[in-house]
Image (tube, rainbow, N blue to C red; front, side):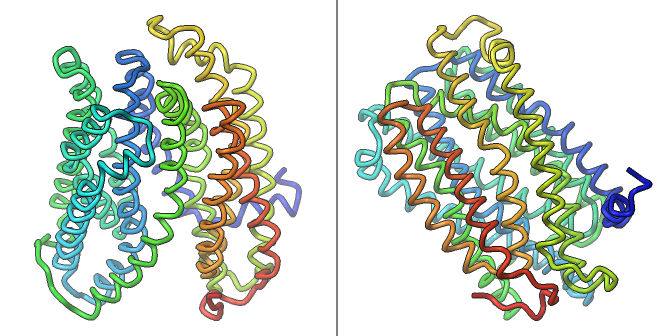
Length: 455
C-alpha cells in the first residue's frame, strides 16, 4: 500500500491534527455511546411488545423529530459564529446565553402548539384508540424537559467544539445513557412504561449539567442568559431558520414510517423501532469520526488550502465512496450471516418475545440492513453538496424523497406489513444515492466554494 503513489496520496490527504482529533473523538464517542446502544435491547427485555410500547415509541419519535430539528441545526451553525466572535474579542457568553434562551422558548412554543392540535391530528393519522392518544399527549407533556435539555446540551457541545474540545463534547453522552438505564431499572416495577420517560428526562439533565460544568471549568467565557436584538443575532437566526426547513424534511420520514406502522397490526411500531435501533449501530460506527475527518479535508481543500490538489470535489469524494462501499458491504455480509444469533442475544436473552415477534424484528432489521451502504454514501454526497452550497438541490431532493417514501410504504406494507416499511426505506436510500451521484458531476468543479453560488 505505502509503495503505491496513489495510496500515498490518499493516505496523506488529512492533516495530522484532524486525524488525531478524529481518532480521540471517535474513541471517546464510542465509549460514551456503548450504554446507549444497549438501551433499546434492555427496554425490549423489560417491556416486550405491546400497545403501551407502541404509544411510547411513537411519542419518542415525535419528541426526537421536534428536538432534532433544533439540535442538528444549532450544533452545526453555532460553531462558526462562536469562532468569529471569540476571534474578534466579542462577548461569547452573552451570545450563547441568547441562543439558549431563544431556542428553549421556541421549542416550548412548538411543543405547546403541537399539543393543542395533537388529539384531532393523531385521530386522523394513527390507529390508536382514545386511551392511546391520551397517553401520547401525556408522554409528550412530561418529556418536554427532555427536549429542552437535549437542545441546550447541543448548544453547549457546539461551544466546546468551537474551542476544539471535541472529546469534552462527546464524553457527557455517557452520563445520559447511564442515568437513563439506572432510572428505568430502579422505577420500572412501579412506574411501568413511564419509567422510560423519567429516565430520558433525568439522563438528559445529567448530560446538560456535565457539559455546563466542563464549560465553567474551561473558563472560555462567562455564560450569561439574555435576549439581545442585534444584527449579528438576526443573521444567525436567518441561517438557522433555513437549516430548520432542511432538518424538518430530513427527519419527517421517520415520523411517516412510525405513523404508517400504526396502521398495521398491534406491536408494529415497536417492531419497527427495535429493528431501527439495531440498524443504527453499524450506521453510527461507520459514520462516527470518519465523516468529520473527510468533510473537513474536502471543505478546506475546496477553499484553496491545498493548492497542489487541483482535482474537483467530485474526484476527491469518489475514492471515499469506493472505500466505504467495500467496508459497508463487508459489514452487511457479516451481519446478515450472524442475524439469527444476534437477534437472539440482543432481544431474546430473557425469553420474553414470542417466536413470531422475534422473527418479525429480524426480518425488519434485514430489510433495513440492505440499505446501509446507500445510506452512508448518500450522507457523504449530501455533505459534498453542502460544501458547494447547493442547498436548494438538497431541499428539492428531501421533498421528493419524502413523497417517494410514502408511496413505497403504501406499496410494500400491503404485502409485507412492517417489513415492507423498512424495505421501502432501503429503496428510498438507494434512490437518493443515485439521485445525488448522477447530479453531482454537473457541479464537478475545482472552483473554490466562495465562488460557488446556490441554485
